[in-house]
Length: 193
Figure 1 (cartoon, helix red, strand yellow):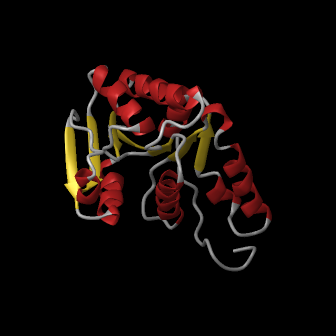
Figure 2 (tube, rainbow, N blue to C red):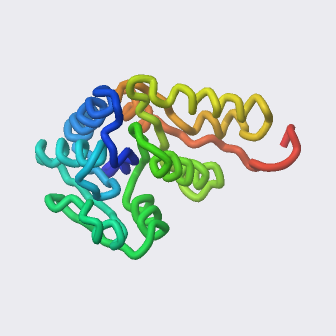
């Protein structure tokens, strides 16, 4: 793995565990010589992980729509800042540049971005690992909801297992390296297909 895309909040959140998780993940990316791809902001958890990777001598690629650059939220010290026209272009470029995807704590945008690449994996558009770094139990309820979607017959267990959830970035990245996508020929239809 050469680059990992990290989705995370443009706010720091209320608990120190969230910011700390960004630092722990940055340290692990650096130790494995994995570059960071992220949304390009200098604020919140986004700014924290970028700053930590940069401080450690790592490579950081930010991708941001011009509208957000105009609001002065872009990080000015990145290895590379790619400015695009739209959020759609941003997400596609982040996906293309990355070998895997991790969500740290964040809000609606974080969850939306993760679920988009997870859906692409479910549909077979890519075979890259997707994970949650569950700092301070932030994603416990989301994980429980996904288990509920399986129990209610909306998601296959094989597709549910595609989302790797760990509290420790070392374990998460180890599982990324060992990741093999499930072989499911059909995602919609009869119960036994």
